Image (cartoon, rainbow, N blue to C red; front, side):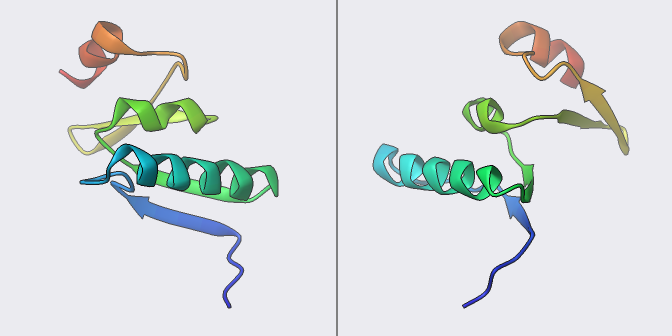
Length: 79
């Protein structure tokens, strides 16, 4: 079995039911607690709760934003 130091995930919760999303979230929190890295590309605001850093990709540039940014404030960064 593989034991990577970094996970690269693209929309890890796409088309999953609530039970599957919880399983994924619990796994990612466990992975993170082992001091390993996770890079997530997502449109799912709920995934942001496990992130230490958040970046918005806009016009080809990654822009760091406050990790507590949500809702309308997050939308304003994306527009």
